[in-house]
Amino acid sequence: MSRPAFADTISSALRDALTFWLPLACAGCGAVDESLCSGCRRALAAVPVPREVGPGVPVLCALEFSGVPARVLRALKEDGRTSLARDLAPALADVLRAAVVSGALVVPVPSSAAAFRRRGYRPVELLVRRAGWHPERVLRVRRAPADQRGLDRIARQQNVGGAFAARSVVGRRVVVVDDVVTTGATLIEATRALRAAGAAEVRAVALAYTPRRSASEGESQVIAT
Image 1: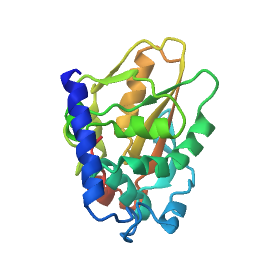
Image 2: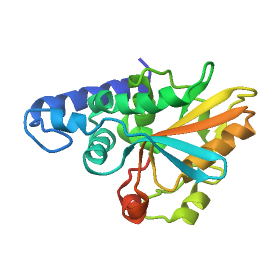
Image 3: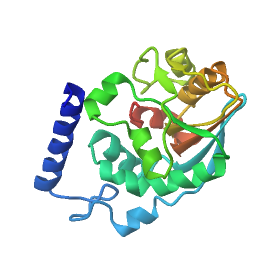
C-alpha cells in the first residue's frame, strides 16, 4: 500500500474509532444519541436561491448558511463527520439537477493540498458523489491562497486571483460546484480558469450561501476549502 493510501486508511480508522467512543450528538441541535435528528434533517431541505456573484457568474444555491445547515456543514468539514454528507446531499442534488445539462462535466472547487492533508478527504467532492454525480477533477490549485476568513470582497478576489488552473475542456459545458458562497470570489476565479481552458459554458452551484445582510459575520464563520 502506498504511503498516501496508508495514511488515508489510518485517518479513516481514527475517525471511526472516535465516532465509536465519543458520545453521539445531533450535528444540528446537539440532541444525544442521534447523528442528525429528524427536525434538523427537515431543516436541510433545499430552498434554491439564485445569486449573481460577478458579471456573467450566476450561482444557484440550495441553502442559507445559518442555523442548522451551517452547523451541519461545519461538522462535516471541521469535525470529520463525513456521514453527514448523505444528509446534505439531497439539497445539493436539487440545484445540480436544475443546472446540469446532458454531457456537462460536474467540477468541484478543489481543496488545497494542506486542507486535504488535514482532513484526509475533499468535502466538495464527497458532497457531489453523495448527490449522485461523478466529480471531475478538472480544476487544480496552482497557488494556495491565504485563509479567506475575515477578508472583504476585494481582498478575497485579490487573494484567489490566479489560484486555479484547469485542464482542457474545449467545447464542453461545465457546472462548477462549491460548498459555501460568501462573496463569490472563489467561484469567479474557478469560472475564469475553466473559460480559459476552453469551456463552452460554465454554470455554478453551491450547497449554501452566506446571507447578504450578515456577510461580514459569515466571512468569519465560513471554513476554508
